[in-house]
Image (cartoon, rainbow, N blue to C red; front, side, top):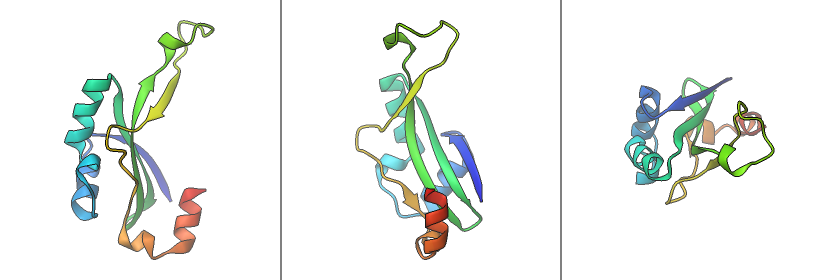
Length: 106
């Protein structure tokens, strides 16, 4: 099972939303706009292999400016969702494989 962190320009992002039932909130264009508005980094984690996958999009936000006790060279981030609260996308093959889902979620 592979685990990848991808950004919105990775062709895999668009491939996933084109082949999986989704909402506007999972589109790379939407994430790009929200990232600009919120000054965050749009990313997604893809867990799976071939036809079985779980796709979790999110915005990575730098927290260094709110933390006063960190060193200047440390990077501190948290994960937020954009307006619209996008959920995870699960391929049909993954949805039908309980063992895969359990393993991927762990």
